[in-house]
Image (tube, rainbow, N blue to C red):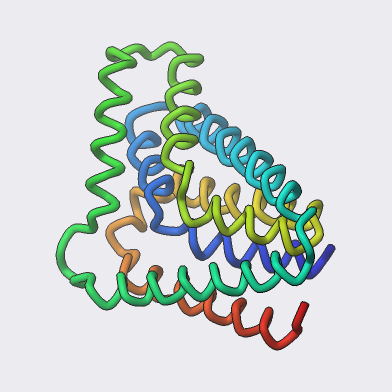
Length: 205
């Protein structure tokens, strides 16, 4: 359980920093009450984690050898993809993921129609974060981890990792967003995926 917790905590925290959901939380926290945004974001990420773990738990009924090496293959694919993406990024231009986050928030704000109702802000934060996380690499990573590791450890580690990133984004994201290198974070995430793939191959099924 401890190994699964540590694995998912590290993987989710590194992968989520600088992700689309991270910047959505940053932008929302600059426009609305931080405690409402934080509550909505964490609730959405926790809900997505539970859903992903449930999917992974269903996949776990397949033979262990298949799920184990499928996880290794996915980690390799994500690692190579992230490293390639990092190599194509310019250190000076605005990140595409930031533009996507801004666009998502603008659409959400139109639906909110300038309302300062606490429930509306909470709901907007939840929906925007949940939709942004759907199909994201961290969701697929959580499904993969849950299929091959202790479910409770993966769940707690993933929620903890998401919560750490959400707190950073909401409480200090506007201060660090301009100083965080998306290229460096993406490269570190890619390396981490490759390390976990290597560890999985070394340990065997």
